[in-house]
Image (cartoon, rainbow, N blue to C red; front, side):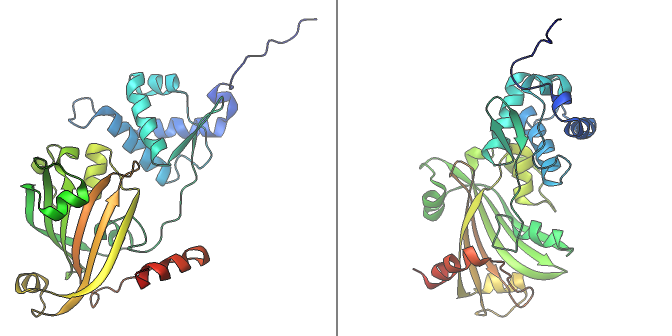
Length: 286
């Protein structure tokens, strides 16, 4: 009697998890990679997969096809596939397990504004508010001392600077100065960012996503220029928010300075028993 031959290594993707295979096949039908776009192919694929993971289309724990399988599905080279998977893995969206494959990772819960790495635009839009923006400054500039220090820029490196007023439900909410390291977002100054989130723009065009942010809040009186743009009296006290967002490698990605009118929308924080003590320590300045 012949003995069935046992293959070594992980089983074929379709055999190991039919449900995951069907879900991925359905996702692949909707994922479009434009070879004529200026956006790198790996960034486009990574964005497609990231959106599917965050939306639950690719479920937590589901195994993905092999590198060669992904090459065949999307007609892309192995370096492109590896770059997309490496970026997803570095951001905690997928995990690689030796001799088993690549799996969709568990996603952390999304909590309130300033407790996540999202910006004002993303946070309030997903809550159903109408968010408008007016851009006063957008372009490459010689970095000031604070920008060079925070973003770790060399003397000759420039910063991409965006000065905006965000309004929620047609009421000015924040007067925001955003600084990005220019060398990490080449050519962004030529993009049309009207009505677009800054974080979403750098995610879609450069594959960059903030992993964590350090934020501080104090109260400061606004100057006449800020007051006029915000529709308040000069000298009015507002929340003065400073934030530094970092990528998955711990490199500074965004330097954010904003005046926040809490009379328009109060700040909300979500905490749990494990994080309450740390929040109190941070608030005390310890």
